[in-house]
Length: 115
Image 1 (cartoon, rainbow, N blue to C red):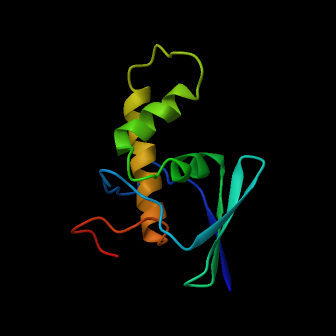
Image 2: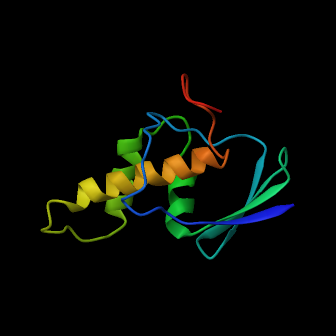
């Protein structure tokens, strides 16, 4: 069994867009103080998600679009910001987080996307 720490990547990492991400079946999840430990039964791997990564994964239900998840994350900040770049940065972070989740096999592959 291998363990991997997972956190949102910085803006400099290339991102992919998963239009309507869906969490992959067969991954057991245990939440710990807003963070999560996931066990991938098929691959016998553990994944540790920070609070933001777990927030993103928990919304990957096959119904919410990437932009919807970013809007929800923006709403978690509580107060509106005067910085017009914040929504764009959050969307970029969500895309990066989804790319990382996908590359770790935690999301269902999208049509045309490598498994």
